[in-house]
Length: 190
Image (cartoon, rainbow, N blue to C red):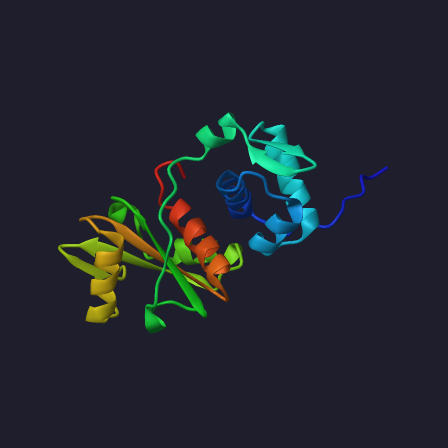
């Protein structure tokens, strides 16, 4: 007899990472709070929590969920995610930027990063490379406004060879999820 399957999960690997980070920021947090902060259903959150418990990354009680020592060590040093206003350089109502240090040589055209952002529900991602003291899009086909470039360079403390990922979405959460997903494609562990 064929196995009956339920609906496909409505979350991604980024939601798992965000769940673990949210739990680590709070002493105890409940499923309803997590669902609200993540923008996904309680059923999806339950599945994520079960996965994290199986891995020994969190513990659960009636008082909520807490991160374990193993969970703390699993969380590598998080990238900084900064809400930014970059005008029409990003798509969506909200934009969040992050830096992938020294990843300029791993960027091709930025399409892979955009696609990964879209897969997690963001509107997209814009990829900028910092070379010779300037920010530019891969291929340099569009000039970046000076004030936008200067504000990103200062806000993110850019160094030669860094890549700026700007996630765009309907809100800050989806924009950050897009930036995270896009940045993961350029990390050394990806």
